[in-house]
Image (spheres, helix red, strand yellow):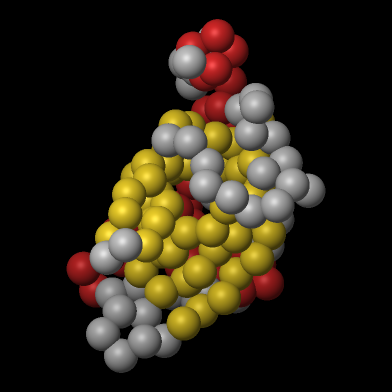
Length: 129
């Protein structure tokens, strides 16, 4: 696998490789490390992002769990098993930003892995420009 680096904005078919829960006072979150499965030339690249678990952000975390195929029985009981997240696959739409001088990878949207075939990707010449 290639080293973790900034990745371009866009849609990617990814796999969850690592999960770490961080219970900060104000904003608990899951730190996720993904590897790109599809979207040349990014295949094999890894990137990290956060999904917050505050009451205000739970809709997005639930969206991620549903589209990545998290165990429905655990989901129904509001249980998160970090190990059950490893290996899950799905589509993410990313954007990059700088916050307080630090690079941040934003997870803007999710879709099931099966939706990958229907995503309209730019041609390789558009990616290179």
